[in-house]
Length: 141
Image 1 (cartoon, one colour):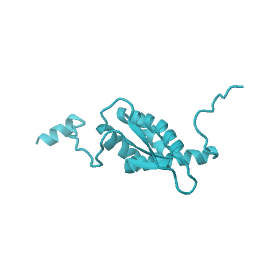
Image 2: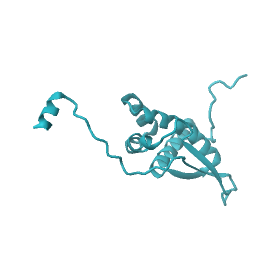
Image 3: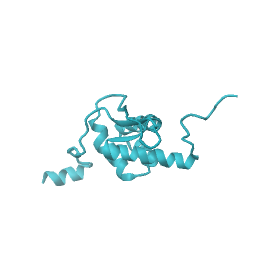
Image 4: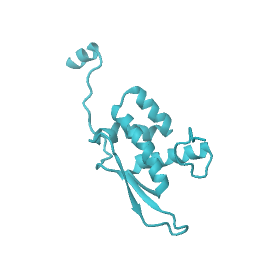
């Protein structure tokens, strides 16, 4: 038997719980730029988040809607697309995982996941272009 359709870690959870866990980790990563979690969760978060950052770098409407759907949080999606993605200069490998000390309670391996590039949360000022000839004429007067 082959394991078709069995990609990814299960974490001993049902599908909806697993999806909520990943959405929460990805939103936290976008908001705080670094999070500490178990090593397995960090590796799975990196796998999913790398794809979202690639979509955010494209920045068109279709990818924006996909990111909003996958994150489930409009604020995090906007932050990723408008602030974080323009500051990333590389084509892939946006995130790094560093091993941390084992958790005190159950001795599970911990890891810190963060963006490789330095990211400032200040929105960069982008000069907006007039959308139509009429607005350009009004601004010229």
